[in-house]
Image 1 (cartoon, rainbow, N blue to C red):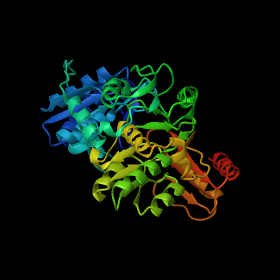
Image 2: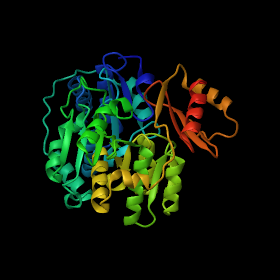
Image 3: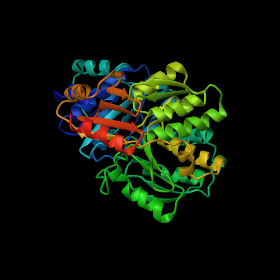
Image 4: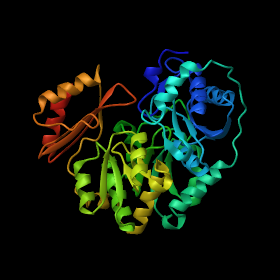
Length: 443
């Protein structure tokens, strides 16, 4: 048993370096503790394509089995498949993944029956604390086999976005980043008759082409080039477990999470009165002003999928958007889904008959930095330093948010990495660069 539970248990999931901070003994005990925490007698388990996943699967599944409960194995799938199946089957779920982290990492995302999130305020601390009461048992090679649960998932997404609502003449580019999206993309493509140019769709836990992290623009160079050279309608890049996707417009510009939140919420508000939208602290003020002007009810939340989902469920909100490009849907059990967001964008473009770039341009977004990450020695110390260089009041719901008449920023510590995440919006590029310089030189 490693002594790193405080290191690997994050605010809303579990992550560590496999074989170092996250051991097979840890994985076994987490599986056992999770099984004791939930009421159900059966637990869904899926995983992404990481090199250590079969070892992790046997450890977690052995823990579940030795607790006296059964495993329903759904195989190598995107994270949002497990979330949707948790809702459809009313079963708790485990996804073995470290999302966009480097290949040495692995981890677990947990949800209760009905895709109810499990985070630090909804069970994760109890699961962690119970581990000390669990003896390490034998890890068996369980020879788990999948059934036809994926068929239920494909039926589900077709109810949410009907294939006839998607114009099969749309031509787009997709970068799978050698992540989990490649495990089911062909089936989805056949259902919706995709016409697309593909990059790196083979699932490969070595991530040989670029990190499966579309939040870093360096990793978007090839999809941007593909969209521009092939004159495609748009592009999409998925992260490692495919619960998040970043979109590229037809000119090759990156569509920020705030822009996508605006586009989707605006579209949904045309279909439903009194739309409720939950957003996190780093969605831009400009996006919020647009949505407020359309009589959409907005609710602010801390960053993190377990926080967003819990607030959405409490409010019965219709949609949730994060600047980090996670998008949540009430009809998907309040869970995030990059696959549904791809289909949603296609239905919007199909219905409106406009270029993606022209729809985004109509919102007149001011210059923004995108999310910039800084590795720092101590997140709290760095945040205190930021406070000293800007006068006035800070909102501290999640990190520091600061609103001036000419600029806005949010600076917060990552919940999964030793990094400070910075997002800035300003009335001009010059002011944006000045604010960024002020922050970066004082952290």
